[in-house]
Image (cartoon, rainbow, N blue to C red; front, side):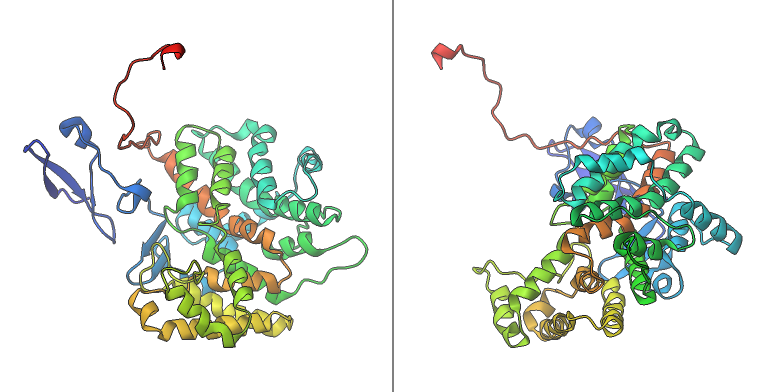
Length: 430
């Protein structure tokens, strides 16, 4: 780390030197840990736009250049050459596995997909129309009641067991929530299927007839999970870290992350894209809606364009666009007109000076919802699918935080704007 210093003049006129720390790549950070102690002031950064909350070696994003890397590997290379289980190993362990390591890791995941039968009974307590994300969060939180004997965060073996368990069982929990919604019997996992094949089997198989897994559908899910596996200190990941910093058990921390992901500003964007496309309806209406999006007085917004971090382009969008085309060609679904509309809208927006000047490029959510819809996954499950991919990122960040000896309980400060001190008055004198 660099030992350079940033000189700051305090409101009182005194000067303080704040250490500047340098990472492997990316912007330097100013260490303000002693600012309040030495100067009596806090920093103010709503939304943590310019604040580094931790040190991490898991994921790197360069929003200006459209770069996303997991442990130093560009996501484009991983999407083209790897699979979700191998990427999961990479995120959790730090390096790509050997063939022996990958075989052992995958076998561990495959053989721990079943749920305790008591957990399955838990689903009977939900209404038939309960939102899948509500069930996902509740059931994941309940895992601490079933697996409490391996929750010692100071034990590296227990940390491994947790990570493997959450990765293996989350698809089973998600599929059970879906089956409850549609009134079908729960389908048990199969150890002979890979991760995404198993998920499709649990979602769509029924006892009355054989279910044939489409290899393109499994490939599409695998790609989506790779692209969603981690994204640095986003809202849900930061929530997992914050909850975990208190010493809460890891299942509670993941449940908190799931709840944060449920927010429409975070995990619900792909569903919003579909609703927008359905509202536009036809390519002949694109110019009308693009003009509405540019009108500040009009509430209509183009969903799936731009990103909080990426100021150039989202590197995941191009990858997922190609897969979307492949899925629709293979499955011959009726949603092809929706994809055609999305493509035309993308081209119009990319050539419009307004969107070019504001760097409003398509992001990963622009096409992911169309893929899920083409696979027969309902919109209520879209954020659940996001959670399945992101689960390994959450687990990786929790493990990293717990193993870091400098970790403290997260405790942001505030700028207080309420009343100054005032005295209590009896009710008859108010």
